[in-house]
Image 1 (cartoon, rainbow, N blue to C red):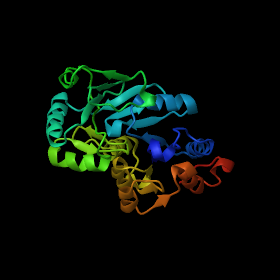
Image 2 (image 1 turned 90 degrees about the vertical axis):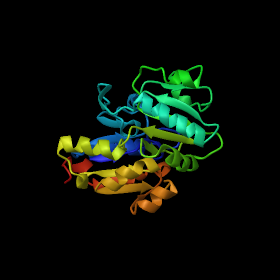
Image 3 (image 1 turned 135 degrees about the vertical axis):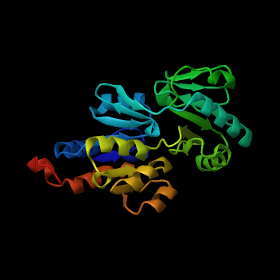
Image 4 (image 1 turned 120 degrees about the horizontal axis):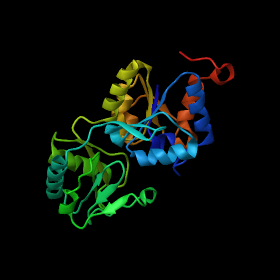
Amino acid sequence: MIASDLDGTLLRNDGTLSPRTLRALRTAEGAGAEIVIVTARPPRFVDRLAEATGLVGTAVCSNGALVYDIATRTVVSSRVLPLTTAQRVATALGAAVPEVGFALETGNQVLYEPAYRLRLSEDVGAELPVPTLADLWLTEAPVTKLLVWSDRLDADTLLAAARQGAGDEVQLTHSGGRGLLEISAPGVTKAGTLSMLCAGRGIDAAEVIAFGDMPNDLSVLGWAGTGYAMANAHPAVLAAVPTHTLSNEEDGVAEVIERLFAGAERTGSAVA
């Protein structure tokens, strides 16, 4: 299995999948490898990528909260964040870190209160404002992530502050978004969900090659038999992961796959 993050890893900085990388992925699939996307992104983003590239298969979305079948656009399994937990954590963080804003990711939409002023061009049409912070907790939609945003603190500083205020009640991480913290249900990680997926397929961790660039990828890069940090990765990832590849702009994922599956495209044979 090849398990890859998207932004900053499989995708170039403009959000596209290069022809070289797409060709490498198809070579690996043709040789018998399964490709699994492991991303902080919600299913709607994966849908757009699939439409543009023809990718199918499985995606672990929202930092492990969802397992998504790309071909049928179906959520196979989910581990949601209880709304009461999200509210308690937001209250604690709001007291510990003033002037932050909050939003709820549902997989289909982002519900945000007035202090959450982060807007993403790729989420136009999916972002839904609510009048007040109190209204945020009235949603009946299942919540995959609580998003915390600050326009003055970087993501690392925000993460450190949240760890003091949130304790062990939730899973805290970030994926490089400017001043953006991502909070999931306790125990929800990319690696945890990927390991369950692999167990159901009879795949050992030793048979998994993983790629990533941000702190939310560390669990997968440490769990997989071989984990590659991108050359453009966060300093903490580069320090923690001994094996590196080229940057996302240099098609680092493709470079590794091409070496691993050299000759497979010519022969059509499986690679052990």
